[in-house]
Image (cartoon, rainbow, N blue to C red; front, side):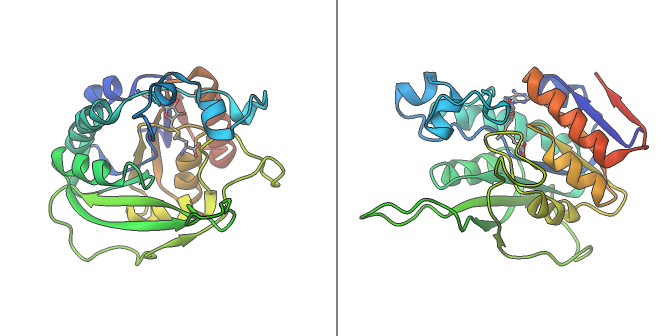
Length: 248
Ligand SMILES: C[S@@+](CC[C@H](N)C(=O)[O-])C[C@H]1O[C@@H](n2cnc3c(N)ncnc32)[C@H](O)[C@@H]1O
């Protein structure tokens, strides 16, 4: 198997084509479809929804799949989570980002998909914007579970993360509207055994893949949006060189 693969493809179609028990961990950040109760949330573009502006920055280009209402999102999550369980080895881990609105549905969906739900790890964002008369929305959540029983083996991992959202003027720049911090991802991928394979069906700008290779894990990624599939390939290749890869 090559050290990394990135497929520009629908996640569900790609998962269905993968061998049973072929990965050690699924570490991912699916479209949240958060706030999709309102028609405007489902039909608007992600750039305006997440940045509140019409910026033309490449790091803010639209991405796919953020248009489902609550029922649609739960149904779709269960479909791909069931396939993700099939391709994960027994005892392997699922690690998945969500926000406060989707947290109840996210934990229901992983259990509906057959995973053993193990917990919720908060990611605290110190730069969240405060609003008068409101509690500040400073946290997103990492929901995790396992494919059946898991022994007490591997690294000891934190119970929460504290990290800024990547910004355009950071030294490494920002590549996706909902990009996750590389340091957080480098810690999360350590749930996968050293040398094992991490799968991210919703790769975005490839942060999980970059983290996996930097931590000595293999990586399989899937991203449906052409622009982000290309950004993913470039960012993972930088972390991987001169290792082998495959791209379709
Ligand atoms: C929340 S973003 C992931 C961002 C990523 N964690 C990062 O740090 O760059 C989710 C990604 O999933 C992609 N996506 C949406 N629906 C998809 C599908 N059905 N199959 C594969 N990718 C999909 C979107 O285009 C988007 O880039």
